Image (cartoon, rainbow, N blue to C red; front, top):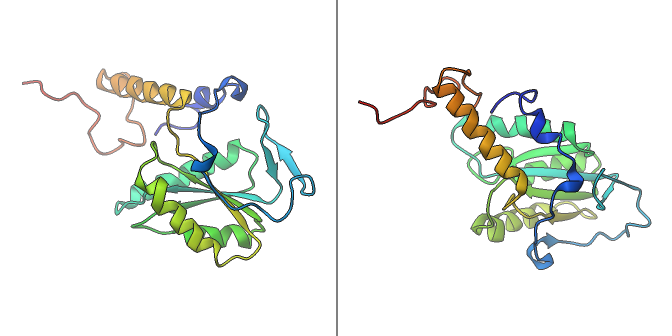
Length: 199
């Protein structure tokens, strides 16, 4: 992963130009809050019509890895996400194999005053983990916190910006192979960003 400065072009795009993914409402796990939106103080993110409540929190959850370096990268992404959005409470979580767990992240969010928790899977496609595992773990975690609602959002899916991200990755690696760029932080120290098959 390159520095935030190098990738600023990917994240400075106007959000109003992005197409909303076609996701059926019944595919998101949601428990309705007891307080209506009209009665709750909220704010709107620029370029969207979604109302964010003042006490909303986000948990960004990945699969989890036995490789600590991979788990630490989620922390970096969470810091980037928090710095670029209107959310004041953002916590990382791993579905399995590492801590903090979804349960741990729920607790941290509530301790910071969250009244609604948005569980956002850091997964590409809607497989079993999105259909079953993450909703189940989120439901178990929510049982410990009366009066707190939660939503499990869609995974990243077929989003226009992912094309830009993949293209950026490819160009970076090709530049590295050509000797025109340093290793990105993902490949740093591994020596894997090279061309194979030449004899």
